[in-house]
Length: 252
Ligand SMILES: Nc1ncnc2c1ncn2[C@@H]1O[C@H](COP(=O)(O)OP(=O)(O)OP(=O)(O)O)[C@@H](O)[C@H]1O
Ligand SMILES: [Mg+2]
Image (cartoon, rainbow, N blue to C red; front, side, top):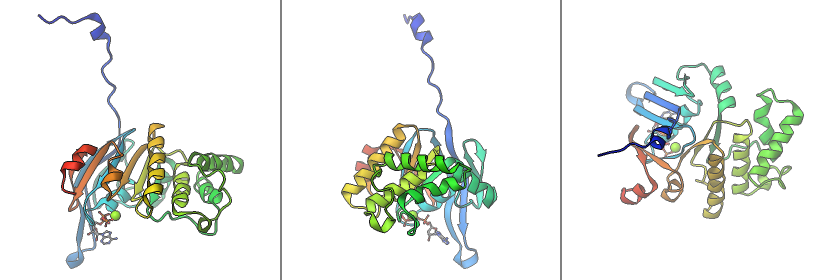
């Protein structure tokens, strides 16, 4: 006989996690006629708030194309993209720029810092578009640079910083507007193994503080440090929920 205790019935059912990113039947076609490339072919993907995921797959499989759409840097040819429950798939450039500034942070392999600006000025820049007053801009930029361990490098220009330090400035710039999602396309691709680990430790810490992190990588050792691996091939998601240990058994 099964007995159900009163305490059992009082245990709350787990709160369902909310989908912060939801791609539905996403297609992306570049060019037309003979030069047509189907970069994304019916991609469906849900990323929940608070997850730390990586995207892997061969070169040309559509990882960056998907990231650019997720990051509102580009629009899909077809399909729906719900970011925080709002379909942004066909929004115009101005609306997308506004959403990027409010909700998203983006980190690239090549840092993309402005060479004539100091670390502090680079990090203050996104707030110029976000209507933050100058004193708060400075305070928040210093706080973001401190968070990535660069409080002693505020006035250095990018060419006075190492690759790892430049990427940390780029991360500070990406988080300074307090995004809900941090996207990174091969953020450690140009770094050696020690600085790679420094950058990954920052991502882990940002994720622990509540930011959803999605990162493209070619390196299994990098992907293993995330919670979930999404695998692309030929413009399709062929695995959406690999675990770090699954990577060991998969032909990479
Ligand atoms: N702007 C573009 N115009 C035309 N074709 C493009 C464009 N961007 C990407 N492609 C094509 O779309 C496909 C997917 O490219 P994508 O950059 O998304 O691949 P990837 O998985 O990020 O590759 P990698 O690992 O080399 O960065 C490729 O065939 C690529 O040549
Ligand atoms: Mg790419």
